[in-house]
Image (tube, rainbow, N blue to C red; front, side):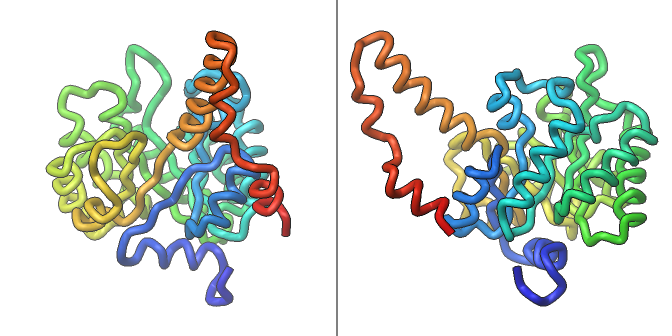
Length: 275
């Protein structure tokens, strides 16, 4: 990484202007590949890790130790900044969240995100006051570490069927910014109008937009809307699973090996993972 302040400072500068894509590897190999393809930063994916471990994507599927081991593996594999998808801090209480955030910072991440989803079907979002306190606690834990780590506040309103997700997300993200979040993120937002409204409402804070499917929008489109950071969540992981399942089904259902024609070559992969 550059000599001007290290990984954390470089990650911070990426958010100052323009727009960049921060894709989501799920293990060391996918992280190395994405770095070598030229992406300037990476973010972990809890869903991608769940699928690789044979688990469903659920808030309670992974332990904090499993998440931290994966984050540390990815950080150690690459030289670019890594942002940790740290769900809701893997703790229901503020003390537990504070301790877990400190452990996450110790892995060497340049950023981490804290979301406001509870994992409970009857009350899927923390109440705003409690959610804001949790962001404030995460900020305090980062500051106490002395590390240069950016905090992303996530409002999960679009993912959990809130009746007015845009207004609720804006209100929550504004509160999270006041509590110390430096990047703001409402996963599930999709339309040009909603994205532009959100970006304007929380300016000048940088906004991350999740593109987990092809909505017709391009990187250029999102940049023109004022988005600073674009992640893909579990999408690359699901693309890999899609190719794998299609080839396997073709073999078991049709007895055909045609699905193997899309496989990367040994030479390409060996070159990718050779220093």
